[in-house]
Length: 376
Image (cartoon, rainbow, N blue to C red):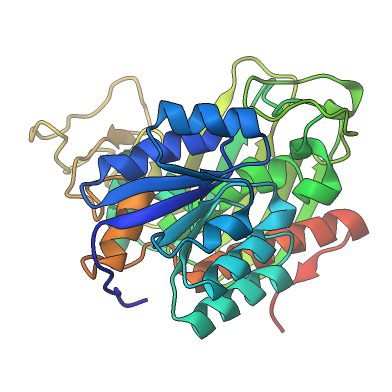
């Protein structure tokens, strides 16, 4: 998408004052041309505290009232998933640019309706996929773009928590409000990051399974979320796994869990397997060996790597520092810069639709027990 131009500064309104909004308001305000001027939330007491803590000028009782404020250029929507599409469309039709918290929507049909509304309004809608902007993640993507890893034929995307279910009894665990659980909450992050790093958005089929083994028994709760316990039944997945095939023959495995029996948490990571090298994103590391089991690459200090006696196969780890594409490492900075005509939008609508299509496919496969074709 080509950059557009908006008078600066970009004035934001926040829809929702949950846990994630506290991080986002700070990120927006750090940008020299970004400022949060308004917010709305259902909980009046929490809204008042939020506005006071962050010196936000105006508060509104509803999203509709906020959308009517002509002094707001853009909105950030961070509400339960079932509200994403309708509020994004309403905001776009009111002339606001939109940053929409993940996942995109309850399904791809809703997501497509948002994209159509953005096109019709001439406004920008971007998904807040913040994992793309982590510096280490950008380093490995730059290696992929330069062909250092060769052809990437397989990748693994993983995020496994031991006990990390957002507060039980809240919308996070309720299917009609959230759509899905771990798959939509952390699975969407790892899937998006994996495809973006591989630069491969042409899936053809998916097989997936989901499990609900802990939250439905009142187990596995973590500390995330400000939402009040409303006694809602937990009926979403707390573990999801998928196998995805792509048009060029590449494959991806995805494993995510809010809760599972293991030792420490297995943090978010993507591992890439290429014909000329492999890599991990967290931390950024390159694995490559030549015919003698050595490595001619330079490490961060500029010294030649030596054979690693502890690794008999000679595969060395080379953590590289490179000039990254988005040095600000911020999705909101990218959004603001794009609106000012300074930077291309990192998260495109077409990419976001592909990710949503895969998520839909995983859910369908889990429900039917069969592989789902994503393309003819």
